[in-house]
Amino acid sequence: MSGIVEKIETEFIVEFDSDSDASIVYNSILPEIEAETNQRSMTVMSLDSNRIIISITSGDVVSLRASINSYVRWISLSEKILKI
Image 1 (cartoon, rainbow, N blue to C red):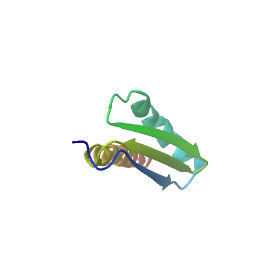
Image 2 (cartoon, one colour):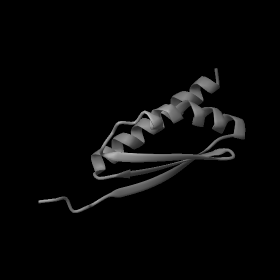
Image 3 (cartoon, rainbow, N blue to C red):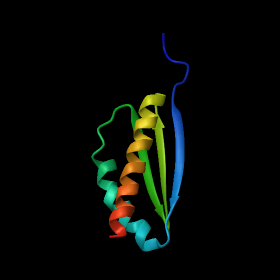
Image 4 (tube, rainbow, N blue to C red):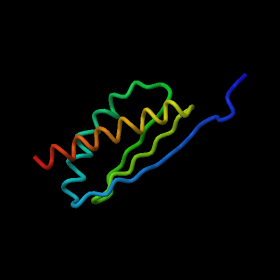
């Protein structure tokens, strides 16, 4: 029996104080997306001036939640490093 949901999609936008901060964070987490080996979800990230837009598509809620948590942690860590 297959699951009720075929795929789940979400998009979240993180807005920064400046284009420069957004670019630094974007470039710091971009390698994570390029090296992604997760077969259960797919992530697309884009940079729009001072905003990072992250779109995640997943086949299940557990994988979606794990992906969201990972990106939130990476962004949070990158912001903390920017403030040092």
